[in-house]
Amino acid sequence: MESNLNNNTNTSSSESYWMANTTPPSFPELNENVNTDVGIVGGGITGITTAYLLAKKGYNVAIIEADQIITGTTGHTTAKITAQHDLIYDEFINHLGEEEAKQYYQANEEALDFIKQKVKQSKIECEFKEEDAYIYATTNKKAQTIEKEAQAYETLGIDGQYVDQLPIDFSIQAGIVMKNQAQFHPIKYLTHLVKELQNMGVQIFENTTAVDIIEGNEPKIVTKYGFQVTCKHVVSSSHFPFYDGKGLYFSRMYAERSYIVGGELKGEFAGGMYLSADKPKRSIRTANMNGKELLLIGGESHKTGQGGSSLQHFQNLKDFGKENFGIDSYLYNWGAQDLITLDKVPYIGQLTSRHSNIFVATGYRKWGMTNGTTAALLISDLIQEKDNPYQDLFSPTRFYADPSIKTFLSQNANVAAEFVKGKLSGGSKRAEDLRKDEGDTITYQNNQKAGGYRDTNGQLHIIDRTCTHLGCEVEWNDGEKTWDCPCHGSRFSYDGEVYEGPADKPLKKLN
Ligand code: FES
Image 1 (spheres, rainbow, N blue to C red):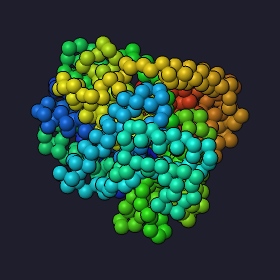
Image 2 (cartoon, rainbow, N blue to C red):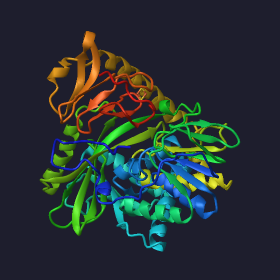
Image 3 (cartoon, rainbow, N blue to C red):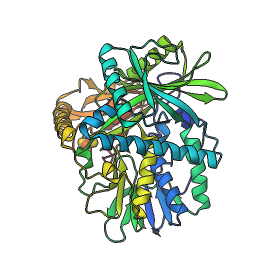
């Protein structure tokens, strides 16, 4: 839910390329109680695809979305449709097992195939294009990791192999290709699905925030203004789960921000989608911008609220584009938020073992197009009481001791350290020191620390930096003009409104 980003510091747009060029249909707010078979919270790729699959089977479905459908996380992706989710298959074989690693690949390949078939059958004009996906190493150390990944591809029967050069003019030590993956324009694809939902009678409500569930045989989704959606099944596909149900999701996932810039490419692009194995990470693909090639470069990920200046992250991507592709002006830049689970496999299935009619889908890392579609295929099967081969792999109640215990301990140690650091840091500025469009931690009345932002009209906005989730101190994000929490990734507008959970209450305004 990042529709209000306000980056005035350079000439490029802070709106994602996908959102700048398409207008999804709009829908009314929920202003009465409704009854339905399936209530879906979250109108991104997961919620829309789940609604599509179930409505086709004759279920009555309602979607409620806190902001506008399609424009949240789904509107901020790089929109690669691939099962190549970084270098993970060797790691998955070692930590989860060969069978599970293979299932992960198959589930994502099936998701890719679902999108491909849907685009073909319905003739959806969404710039769907098959491309090979590459990961490349520029250091010896990562070249060795790539060799291991190539062995994992062979073990799992993945259609791909080790390569020593790329189709693009880019010098590497080693690379690995996964064949016949794809890319598309996610908003165009989902806008078509939404039209089909409308034809099938699916009810869609926007600007309707779900805040709670009253559990029972017929659970009720409760919205911010007190209206209820009574249903037989709830699907929580709201990026961070809006309802925890004692699943403690905030302690089992962490949030990362990353950045994307887009600039017009001079000359031809040789095709392919790319990801660096080394840090800083670089993700590369092109998009068709009115017959011209728009190069999208992503990367610079860091834990939310812990990455320093986001303006600098955008600049680093632009420098990379200039150095390697000769791009010197950029039309787009935007940020994205991703949630990562303890073992890197998404949580898809029953919210907890005692919730047989409440389902959740979250923790896609950076791979929401396939993982989101996998989630829709899996949850729609579970609701229809059909067996799905991947339900154990993605079950939110699974637990693999290695690596989960290690990741759990290091994440929670990091949260504790950030909690203390936030209480001690910042505050060397006073409100009057803030220039227009500048935000920072300031020392406020009675030497109290607070978050201050002076907007472009000169008006000062002061908030209590204490995150309304569990009390860590939020940090200023200078590129996106938001307050970001370093503990579990909640994000707030410059005047404290919630953009992303787990927090569900605004920051306290002090002026
Ligand atoms: Fe948990 Fe802020 S998101 S304390």
